Image (tube, rainbow, N blue to C red; front, side):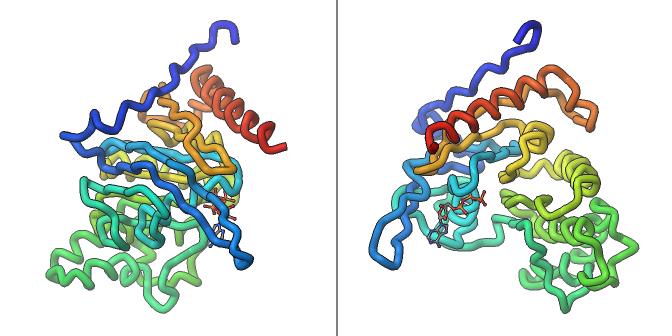
Length: 278
Ligand SMILES: Nc1ncnc2c1ncn2[C@@H]1O[C@H](COP(=O)(O)OP(=O)(O)OP(=O)(O)O)[C@@H](O)[C@H]1O
């Protein structure tokens, strides 16, 4: 490893240390089991515990099937853990709520609504006054560079533009936390790089807590404050690594020794997991 800086692994403090100061997200001994049609039980997540401090950009990586999406769905309140609890802003998750914004890989815009109508959808449902809605929508359309496309319908947009609308829509609702499940997974590599930079810029302004799932290790290290590496069978947190790379981060950081060292550590953890499976 020579002169490369070695990243000190993050040691997870005992959950009780946070009793007085709730983290923005707290996952406490969460297990998730599925029942097969034959009645067999499959453990997708096993006793998963971790915390994400306020304003942190947390990235979850792990082998396919380790339960990354399941963890986001549980946090979104779209499914219930078999055991354990999840807290967002100190409140136990007991169902879906506007305090959690979601951006998925597949485009989830309302196709019959324009870009503007998609972004203002949640604000209208909350009954905000129209001048306030306009100010918020203008702000976020500006943030994602889509002011000139406000009247377009989703089918008139590229994949990257649709994801920009999804990000604007999620942030416009002022959620406590933004949950992103492989949001750039379906984009071509050039657009993906652009979207990563856009997200870093928008996140730098909004300072929302983000939990971002990806398969892409470069993406994890480029975006994250911390990378939560999961193992499979059963799904669990294997290691939490702090990313020791200063912000703002541009594409050039991928050549830096710290970046390469982080990638090496994460790959090592993922390879260990593959070796355990085969
Ligand atoms: N509704 C379901 N019924 C049964 N098993 C399920 C269900 N949903 C997910 N699983 C299983 O739970 C495990 C975790 O799935 P999940 O989609 O959360 O993993 P993942 O890490 O996000 O995978 P990928 O990276 O491939 O998207 C997988 O083995 C999956 O097959």
